[in-house]
Length: 193
Image (cartoon, rainbow, N blue to C red; front, side, top):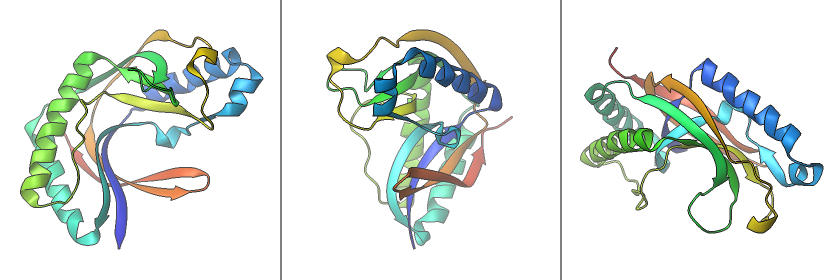
């Protein structure tokens, strides 16, 4: 059987409450027309993606879990700090989402974990494609249903301070449906305490 997989860091309840409060504030701030054009992601979809693996066969699962375990043991639990809300992707082009963006330090630290993890996946022989662009830690809070011209987007950018310490690297399965992606945790590899 094939699974659509990625490896992520899931967030604690305090951060999830902060995100829920932020979403409520945006729902009040945005006009009805804008709210009809976006789809807020449900709380179970709030995570920090470390590495997208794509479709993998059952036979690859033990290799992926070994690579995750090696990566988790190699690093202290990273602190995850989100410091602003913005339209994404943030650098040029048409905006397609609302992001909660991690600090540059968090992106740098998670990037080191991602690099080590992906080196372990390669050593295990797991077939996947590495992303060429630099890692930018974020949570997708909302997606646009249609293309919205950047010039007509209302101002939403704001600073915030949501933080937690990561507990584990989580192997996630993404099942696509008409309602959007649904995620399930298949395996966790804990960082050292």
